Length: 298
Image (cartoon, rainbow, N blue to C red):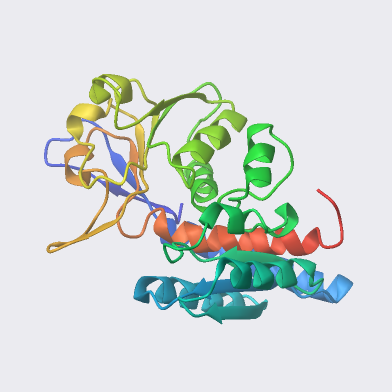
């Protein structure tokens, strides 16, 4: 299969497949491009993503630029708004309200983090659930928790897509999510529950983390702690998904000490090149889905 390769240690216990996030993301984006072309042909609607950037944070500017570039590559329209770092709560809210009311705008993405003087949660919740391509509003979170139709957070959705591509059995599997953030950990657990896995959430106050994670058939690590998970945390044959990414003097690393788990885990995601590419791919998929729902009430 194009999305996996096989890596073995010198004395392997298990043949460890590396799940290729770049390959899977490319497949998702190709499918989105086909869907965009079909939507334009059959309805004349063009999916349009509005990105809203407040301030001049260099990392945020890079992320938004990458998203905008991918939007155009896939045949969608790019509607970008850039506000100064001094923008008030009311000014940002007015832009979001304008985009929410614009029928030509399929999806709205408010780039995070925002300047410290702004109320992030209140602004996010101004985005209608039908245009919430990041899946972060309270309504979207509620729809996910209840298993109702809605747009799902991009990174956790990308993890599910990776697991499917690698044909990882989820029904009845023991899944452990390390991390409880509203961006990844909590929606990740909810998505795994919808796949009929038995889910445990571990976090910074979990006693004896290794004892919890060793019971996992599927281990998703999104703790934001470099090298938190090693060989002692992984049971033979488990699938390990590393959501973390950290810049260090020796390069980019994840939350998992990957070299240690080779030969133990059956599948792992690399850093970089694993979960990361999936986030933008799933954002594009959400934007297409939002365009298909245009004019409807979720």
